[in-house]
Structures are given as C-alpha cells and as structure tokens.
Image 1: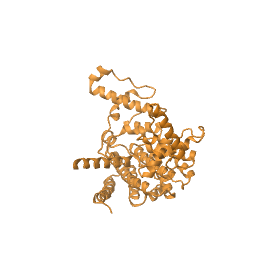
Image 2 (image 1 turned 30 degrees about the vertical axis):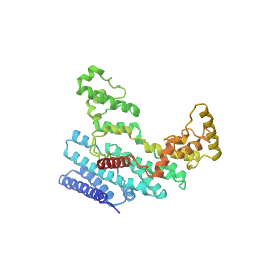
Image 3 (image 1 turned 45 degrees about the vertical axis):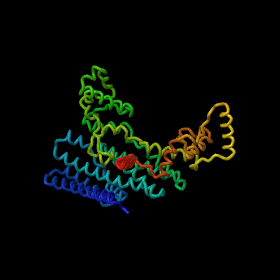
Image 4 (image 1 turned 90 degrees about the vertical axis):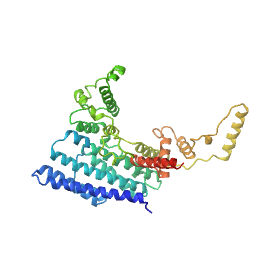
Length: 410
C-alpha cells in the first residue's frame, strides 16, 4: 500500500511536470508574436522533445530522438543565464532548454527507481545500454546542464552493471559490453574545459591537455585568491597565492572569472540533481568521471572475470579450527594473546571468502583486481543498497530524519 507521504510526492512530481510543459508552451507562444525564425525553430524543436519525453517511455523517447535526428539542446547554468545573457530572445531559448533539462532530470529519478527493481535480465541490460546512449546524447552538446545530466545517466548505468554482474545467470560478455561504455570521452578533461570556457564566456583554459588534478588545483587557487581578495589580512598571514601558469590558463580571464569557482551554493538536502538544478555547482564539473559506484561496479566485474564466480560465506573446517585453537593455547602459556579473526568487529566471512578465492590464483592473473572493493559492491547488491549517488543521498537523508524523530521521542 502506498503511504500518504509517498502518494503526495508522486502527485507533486506530476504537477511539477505539467507546470514545466506549460511554461515551455507559454514561452513558445510568446515568442510566436515575434518574426524570429531561428529562435522559433530552436524552441519548437525543444518543445517537441519535451512533449515526447512527457508522453512516451524513455525507450520510445530515444527512438524519436534517433528518427528525428534531434540534437540535445545546450543547457547553461541558471547563473550563466542571469549573469551573461541580456538579450530577451536568447534568454527565452535558454529558459526553454533549462526546463527541458529539468524535465529529463525528473525522468531520470523515475528510472533510478526502476534500476533497483528490474530483474537482472535482458530488460535491465537494454535499459542500462539506453542510459549509456542517453548520457552520450546529452553530452554531445557542450553545456553545464548537459554535463550533469550525462553524469546521472552514467551513474545509473553503473547500478545496472553491478546488478547484472552480480547475477551469475547473466552473460559475462554482455556485462563487459556495458563496461566498455563506462569511460566515455566526455568524462575527460577536454570536455570539462569546454564547459568551463562556455560558462566563463571566454577562452579561460587554453591547454586541453590539462589533467583533472591540475583543473582541481585551479579551482582551489581561485578560491584562495577570492579569500585573499575578501580578507586582505590573509595576504599578510599566508602570502598571496601563486599566479596561474600562462601555458595552461589565460591569466587575465582567470582573474576576472574567480566568481565561477566561488563556493558552490548549498542546495537543500537531499542534494540531488533535481534539487540543485538552479544552484551554482561548477566545482562538481571536475568530477564528471566515475563515481564510487562506478568504480565498485567495474571492480565487481573484474573479480567475476578473474575468479569466475562469487563465493559464499567462508566457514573454517573443523580440523582448521582445532589447529588454530591449539596454537592460541600454546601462545597463551607464553603470555601472548592471539585474537581470533572472527572476533574482530570488522571481520566478515563473505569478504574473507572473496579474499581467499582470489589468493588461490597466480598473481599475474589477479593484477588490478581488488577483492575488498568487489566485496563491497557484491554485498550492496545483495542487500539492495547499490544506489547511484543521488539515491544514496536520498536514503541517507531518510536515515537522518529517522534518527532525529527517534531522538525527539526519547
């Protein structure tokens, strides 16, 4: 039975979708009063995509994308639109594009639920491949919102990969097909630099061979420069931050774009793509690549391909237990205390089984295979808690609220 709160949330999301579509149509109708063909065609195309997204399943929507050869619209940040765009027609087009992006973010929330409930069969496999395709489609156009939507698709693909890999009845080869899609080009630094340059509205980063670590370094440099600018005393205490490397960064543009790297706005909890859609979160663009779940899913696949199966909980043989107890008694007489492995609070018999099965193999075969990360992924799948980051945030917030409610009752 659906609880009243859950029903209210569903109703709220349905109303929100209708409001978004009405805003898109209103923008289009208002623009229709002006004889501007270029913007009219752009908005009309986005409206068609929005209506298809609202009326059809994600599979049918993406079929329409392919048939009509629709390109994903450029979705800037709200901050960019409010800061850099003054032309009414351009703002109207961006507003419609952002509304479409938000509608897609809501749809991905629904797909996140289905990624947890679909059985590990070809249905989940096809849905996971679709999410890979959808992410690549979003990212084929450089944009702030495009990048975050693509990342959510990749995160949800990792959930499907983990659940399929954990099922020994599902084809290993098909799991490897999905794994090949887990490192798309848009997760690389060049794409991130293009997004940053677009949001700064200038050629901010001039060397496309920068690493993510270097990019993150400039994020911290910008924040240090901002802190010094706001509090001159820091310059006396710590000294001025070093200037940007002119071979990597346009120094003048960087100094004028420090606000782009300012502390991100804190959206209300739970912090998800939908709830932070209008917030300035540029710093997170640096982490477009694999999430924790992404790495865990790939580690689980690696373990299965190397070991060939997933072991059950480790149980010591009776003779092994007797031999160990004899050793413990022997050292106890010498005043040396030996603790049993299972007495360690962090000991898990399933993790021990993962470790032992991997250690049976030659080291050359197990290179790059982490039994501990694979175990975490497998255990999360078994417990039904292998969520993408947004779902993890939602579940964590529910737990926080539960703890608060319990503390109030005491």
